[in-house]
Length: 481
Image (tube, rainbow, N blue to C red; front, side, top):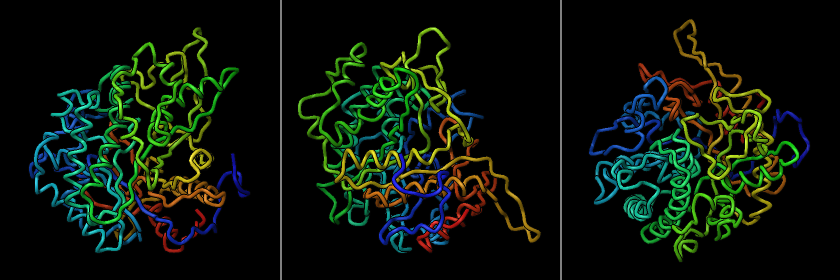
């Protein structure tokens, strides 16, 4: 689906974005902060998971990561060098409440307060995400996202953070990619806490949705400025294959997309989701009044996009293909869809093995606009992992030439511009990621950053993609790759 003319490969240049369109970049707390046991921070499920042998490639952990906790001021200065207009960061729940309950740790609040002040002083809009997967381990010990009490605790946490920062934060995002938290954390086991249970995954879906609604209510009680409220979803762009391709798309769309957009934006779960998962649960954990809580007006919907997904109904005879882009950790992130297979797609691919298809981003934005025409959108993550090769100039200066990432960004910014031109209310674009970081189950083996981090020395180097992005921001016009 294409909304406008242009190069069929999306390698357009000279396209100008409107004033007010917010150019930024994004990170997540566990992936960059380090300082895992400093200033009262408690353990998160990712601390536990990464320290469990065999869970993360090379035994990597987030103990140090990019040491951003100690280097945040110089990292903010790098954002200025790039001309970033916004910065999407996440707050580590266990840095605020070590056990997920009780009073806030002042040192934790101070860190994020100083970060927000530093952004504002540099003219950068703060976009704060309350949850990017680092659940306090003590709450997981009580059942984590499979139990309702975690959603209630999340509201208390949101209230504490909102009271401390709610005079300055411009955009509050409750959750990042609840699909991953629920299905990779409790279904497939590829993410922390590493549970492999179809029932647990579906329980987590609902309690994450509920946590979102409760958190927005809590924030509205305490904030004193006029922020925007948001959630970020990694909605799947699905293509079907074979005679039953449309049925395969419907099935995965229910689990992956409408399980979230239904209650969040329509105020109801899709009936076919209940039918498809009836052998797993009767969904009795959805209590009276929950949907009204979840269905909060959103000022902006965050959209994360990386690749497309090709699905088919499995014939039950040939080997079932599971090229869904996720690590195989023993369980399935697709409860109730054991007869659906995920087919390989043509390349090229990123280092994650994900296909590169900018048309999918345009398609997703247009589809969301068609279903929710009054809903403003923002691209809150888009980027690519490639095997960067750092070099040194004759004068010893570090350089990272990453033409594949530059090409990727040019093509996806073109897709975003085409959606804008078609009338989509798209407010901004946050490139993933500002820096190379701990890439969850893949450890430090995958580099998404537009800034290179040498994990031995913590040296930061602006890659060519960062310089390309700086040119885009300064001119508001897509430069040639």
